[in-house]
Structure formats: C-alpha cells, structure tokens
Length: 182
Image 1 (tube, rainbow, N blue to C red):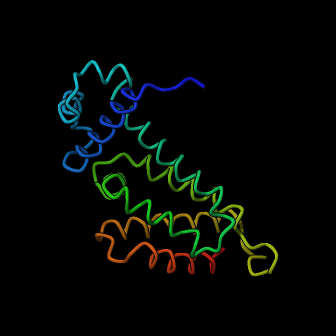
Image 2 (spheres, rainbow, N blue to C red):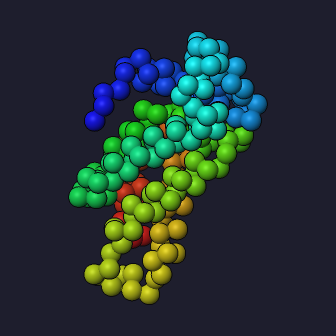
Image 3 (cartoon, rainbow, N blue to C red):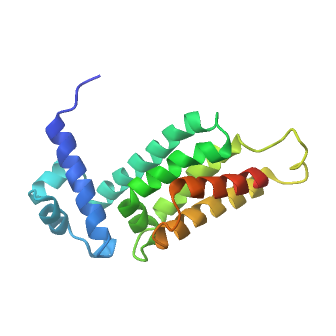
C-alpha cells in the first residue's frame, strides 16, 4: 500500500473543514469554490487537484463519516445496547459541527440523512431478536425502518437542542428503547 503524502491529507482535511464551517453559516447551494478556497486558505486550483467540484467534496465528507460509523458497528454489536451506543454519541458530540450542519440545517441536501439512516438500518439488521418470539408477528423491514428512523430522529433532536444530555445518558436512554424495539 502506497504511503499517502501528509501534505495531501492536511490539504484535504483543511478543505473538508472549510466546507463544514461554511455550511454552518450558508446554504450549500450558495457556497462557491472560491468561498471554500478562501476559507481553507488555498488556491481554487488546489481544490480541483483533489475533488471534481464542491459536490464531490461533500460526498467525500459524508462517505468518510458513514464509513467511520460503520467501522464502529463491527465491534459494537458484541456489546449490550447501552455500552455499544456510548461511542456513537461521543462521536456525534466530537463531530458536533458536522452533524449539526448535515442534519439540522435547512439548506442541506438530504442525502446525508438518507445514507446515515440506511447505514444504521443495516447495522440493526443483525440485532433483531428472533429467538424470544417477541417479534414473531412483526415484519423485519418495518422494524428496521422504525428503529432506524427513531435513532436518527433522536440524534437530530439531541444535536438541534445543543446536546442537553451527556453521551452516556443518551446511550442509556436510546439503548433501552432500541432493545425494547428490536
């Protein structure tokens, strides 16, 4: 595997940060490549060395965070709900600006929410209790839609309201609800 030049990584991180910061104050459609370049303190041409356009840059931001959350799924499913959700809520807290912008802003493309929901639903698929009989009369697709939509909705609410409860409290509350549902 080829080693990535740290300057490239630093530039890409700067561009991603610039877009997120701009989206916190401006509709995405109103953000120009020049705005991003100015915010990141780079030339316009530098952006095109790394991304096709601002939509490609936004897509890469979404992809990065969805993939990081999916990586957490691989070990989280081994834990009890409450314990498993603590790192997720800590991740949302750590990346507050991104999630507040991507989920709570009116001018944001809905594709992030859609991708986040699909990712959570896929993660919940293996968590449905099929042995106790409590879900015997329930359709798996309905259960996944219900749990995924509720989870994303609670995250949105938590972020929009300035994270009124610490991540551990949120994990306990949401973990208990998801365990009842799935």
